[in-house]
Length: 321
Image (tube, rainbow, N blue to C red; front, side, top):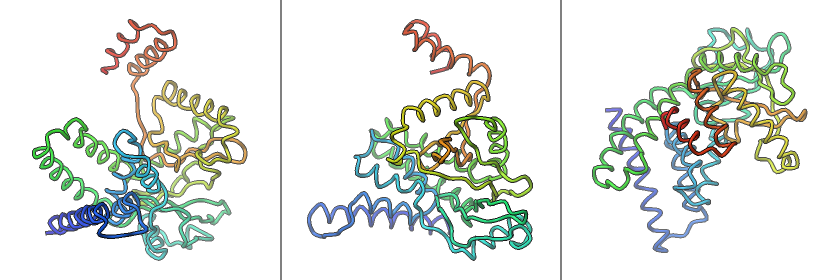
């Protein structure tokens, strides 16, 4: 029954948006809200799964006009928060300790809210300033239910409209679902964050705020406080070439030395600190490459640099492209 209720909720929201859009097009209704803004609001109202879907669509300029891209980009780090008292309860349940036992201060007002979780500032009992990442209550169950329903709906649409197959919507949903399952386990993210923080500890260009050992669970993650300007902030444009070079070098190190890389580098996860360091946030999505794949990828990149088409073709085949 809960799945049927959710399916009705999704169907009602989508139908309402389409009907509203049709009335706007036919000039039967006037609104200060644009169709792109209304779409973003619809995704936000439907919860984590659709916020994540909107984030994925915001990266596809091949599918949507710029107006929609700009509106959906707001879903990267501008999602409505849940109440502070709920956050405090989730922290206590997740860590198995009272707020006062862990923190000297805990700000009930979130500093940021996204699709998976929201972030609060706090001060540990030893004086260290930290952020507390808290998973949205009920997220895991709702996401699994939504993804099952989305696959059913998409299969029906592909049967009715075969031309949609070229966009591979099922593959997109499956990829989002797999990433969501990984992102929702903060224990995995904490271990990955600790590994990246150690790898870039002495870097002159990259900073990774480390997770606090012993203060993380599946739904709560305590991490060092850091910040700066978003990577797409016009104020950092003057240093663009140096920052771009540093970002490329950071990814080359992650891919070819570490064998794993930050897999979600949207502007809400990359900050430029006052020191000039690029600060990486949110290691919920991390890609991994085995030694053979790294070797083949290196050959592919080198063949491009040397403009050797035969070598590039061989390397592409070796990569399985």
